[in-house]
Picture (spheres, rainbow, N blue to C red):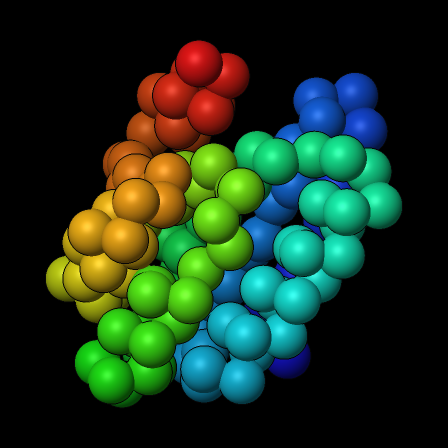
Length: 116
């Protein structure tokens, strides 16, 4: 599975790292793990690192994922060059549905935004 979901207790932060070819089933499985971690640890900040993602799911799958993203999770996404447009589309769909999501190229900037 080219995704891993972790929780950092000291930072009160969840992380998702995705790489390679990553089908929508993995995205949905990671979303469920994020939901569970959020409920268990009462944490609502997520840093997603997709800089090594080579192929994203289809546009229709991305649209559905973005519109159904978790309402209470503030999400910063670190993007790479290969899937930048796909990730930008997820962000656009989510933000248009009043979800807190933003893409970044720099991890420090992403963490700063999450801390606001």
